[in-house]
Length: 396
Image 1 (tube, helix red, strand yellow):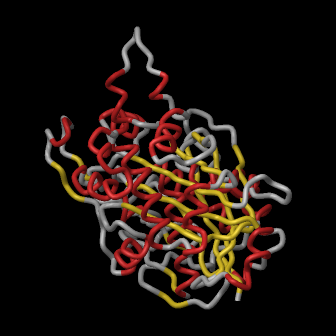
Image 2 (cartoon, rainbow, N blue to C red; image 1 turned 60 degrees about the vertical axis):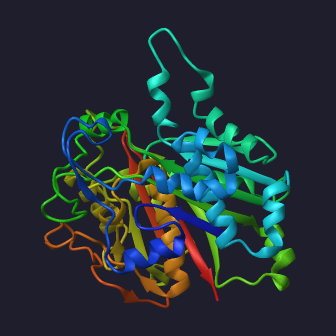
């Protein structure tokens, strides 16, 4: 069990968690139509893209004169870390987060620094582009001590990285804090992969809607900063937070994936949900956040898993319509927004959901609702049959 003490989100909708939260609450989307030729893309595309100029401006206060020489990826990592530390971490911990060796840095990604892939050839590899090397460069540039942990998986990497953080902050650990950072940027490499997987739609994404036909690519960066239970109990009397949000437990499961098609009943997600909910009552769940990808086979798989676990009446939401599909960042961003929802005693809406003919008759939230319940589930899945579920609660 670990406790959240800070967070940050950078997306087309804002440069802090609060800005992004209010944008989702107001029903805004960062998805726009871009014409062919934009960033070298051969075809028109609907996507949620970060402005390179804005990203550099956000990173500059933290990275100084070397900002212009950094890749967008490292700028995004640095900027979202700065956003979390400056805007949300309690004052008494800021210098410790920046200088102590008792801080674990965990980076979640799907593909690493995609902007630099153009430097690779059939005859040349550059170790500095490896996913483990990019965060180490960022830590060296910011003079952060220690070595990074890297979780490289599909869309669930943000959830899996938090599960790793929870393990690293166990009793007797050399760490008091864990910083989890996830970044996803779009390149032709990314677009090609998503198109080959059948994910890219020419229409606005409609998660869990009857007219599912895919999603829209997205760019974002997310950060969550956690404290170990031991350190939290030691400091609790002097710790002043708007709300005490804790990561209780998380599970990663796998299903055999035949011909890229997951098990239609979501057997692996069923197992993950059942394991995570062993010591939690359904009555305590405020909502379930799901990383829907706008494809019928995947979204219906999640619906079936929820129904099988007796959760069909629990309010459910999805933020794909606000941010698009930003794989390496999305499930971490969902966790941050979900935690903020518990803090504010609200349930955020699902943008794009209209037709209520989804199998199982689940309760998809389409407007802002109030809720005083103390927990939420975060669910994410990825290609290859991998799935992750995590439980977050608020202490009163």
